[in-house]
Length: 106
Ligand SMILES: [Zn+2]
Image (tube, rainbow, N blue to C red; front, side, top):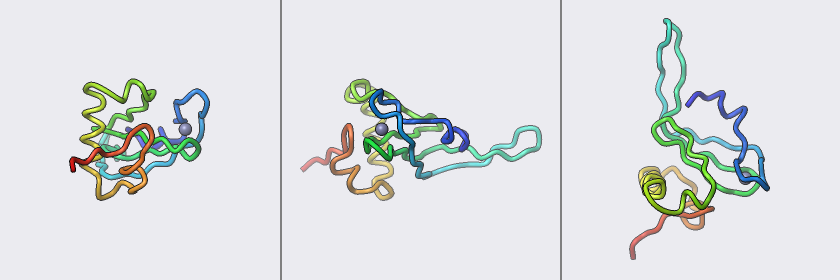
């Protein structure tokens, strides 16, 4: 995703629609017509109001409503994201993130 996207993205929750915060974990520079463009590959988006988190996975911001994130392939992709970046993700999100955190096997 392009960094400027953050200027127009807001929290997708109907009752929220608030500003978001971005933590970039991985990015690269792409060249288009001889010009350098920054592309964000992996990042954590957090909502400053409702405290939900959203992942950027493989350059795609995944900003889905809670119910579509809880199960299936999307849940698996987001679980993998939490595991992949657990050293960089705030512990509040890993422990009790909204809509879910990192489930650790005991
Ligand atoms: Zn929100």
